[in-house]
Structures are given as structure tokens and as C-alpha cells.
Length: 382
Image (tube, rainbow, N blue to C red; front, side, top):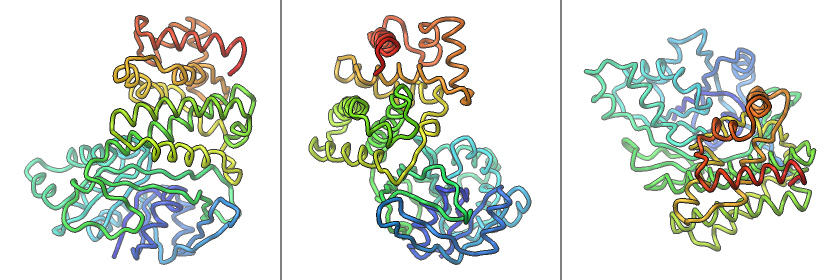
């Protein structure tokens, strides 16, 4: 079985590529990083190391790679011949790979599924839209009849790292790869480690509002204490306590909205906090907290659960408001988005910044609570 994976970065090699190899696929990575592509073609294997006390490792073998910036025709042919196509390139890059995917699909006659494994809602759906834009209208129905774009939710911490062997990847033992089976075409891909579900949205929001919300909150609270890493921040009892309170609020929302079992969800929260506190993952606060403007967006990890909490439960989520305030206080000078937020606050005030970056209305009780938490943190810390 042949699998084509777009994105030969740490997530692609250490998470998706590793599972595909363990499931019996021969891997072809597609990337624009000449050094990584050349190393993969030279060595044809790489190591994946677990970030825990065991330091267990395994080899991913029989791999090859194609530089999509230099060998577009080979990429198109690989797509045309693949049994499964996956991607982990980042949401902003999906449109850029769509032309090559489209041209490869036009050459196919057999069914195939394409799974975008991105940190977003509807990654495969977005890729599908961009691919269809590159296909003549008269060909679209035929291609859609033999091509599935099942959406996925993925979760595995792969921290920033610098290894002597540039192909080696260190990953946490925990992972979750959930795929929406109703959007499949043809037979279900034989991939060990995928959880197939009929409706992906509950799992996407569970992950987004627990892992992503919790990770961002831990970073922004940790920044206020001067911590350098997420595990270092959670070693401080007051940070751990506030993070628990944030995830209790998102947990209450998720259990109410999707009828998750309360005790199972509580266990899930503790598992997530334990992952963040893993001392074998030195995940820097500036990595996790980067791009605060994106994270303050109305449909992202802080505002979305806070607004849904208000609407569904009729209350204002105090600790989610505190997380939003902490994001507005994030002033890392080497993060362009943090610099922009601080510039808005300095020149126009915190109220203007809160309205601009969150689109919250001043009449919303959440707006007032964020303002209150912002001033409290400025005066007393978290």
C-alpha cells in the first residue's frame, strides 16, 4: 500500500507518518524543505522517540520524498498512484498544495481518500474546496464520486526540538486521530490508530476546548509568572489551579452540549493536564502562546467556548474571561502579533483592543468580565 503525505515536518514524520508506516504503508513525503527531502531520500528511514521515562524509540523505514517546489510532475504522479493521501502542512498552506492534488486526482480512475490532519475545524473540507477550484467544472462530479475528503481531529504534542540527527523526532506517547467515516469513499483505509466516528464535531470541540484552550491558557498564565516552559508553569500551584478552573468551565459546556459522560470527561481533563506537565516535553511558552491575535479570534480556542458558555448556560465564564485577559497581557517582544496587540493597547486603550481583536460588544457581560480580569491581573498577577 502506498501513502502520500504532504508535510515532512515533525508532525508529519513523528505522528501521521509513523502511524501509516506501522499500518503497513510505504511512505512518500511531499515537502518544499530541500534539506529534509534530501535526507529522507538518502537515509530512507528515521527515528521516532517517545518523550517519557522510557525513551522508547522505533524506526520508520522504506520512506522517500519529493520536493514539490522542484518536481511538481512527480508529485502529481504520486497522488495519482496513492492508496491514501494525508496532509499536515498547516491550515494556511492547504490552498498551496491544492493544485498538485487536483492534477493528481484528474489522472486517477480508482477511489482514494484525502485526510487533512490540521489543527483546525474542517481541514479536509477546506482542501476539498480549494482542489475543486482547480478542476474544470465538467470533471468535478466524476472526481467527487471517487474521492473522499473526511475531516479529522488530531492531537499529539510534538515540541520544538533540535536533534543531532535532523530526521529524528521526539513525540509524546499520547495521540488521538479521529476521522469522520461518513465522508469516506470506498473501503475504510486500514490505519491502526484512527478512531472512526459518524459525527466529528463533538470530538473536534472536545479537543479544541480542552487541549487547545488549556494549552493556550497555560501559556498565557505562565507568561505572567515568568515561567519559560509549560511544565514549569504548571509546577506552580496557582497556575495549575487556575488552569483546572478554565477546563472545568469548558468541560461543563461540552458535557451539557454533547452529553459526554461527566466522569469520563473529568478523566480526560486530568489526562490532558498531565500531558502539559510532562517534564520530558520542554514546550516553550513562547511557542504555545504565539500568534495571540489568531487565538483571540471569535471562532478560536478562547472566545468560542466563552461565548457558547454564555449562550448555553446563561452565565459568564469567569476563568475563560481570565484566559482572554491573559492573552491580551502577553507582551513577548519577538511575537509580531503580541507586539500588535500591545501597540493597540498603548495607543488606543484596552477597551479598543478588546473590541478589535475579539469582536466582543461592550454590552456583552463577557466584555465586562474580561476587563475586570485584565485589571486584576495587572495589579495582582494571576
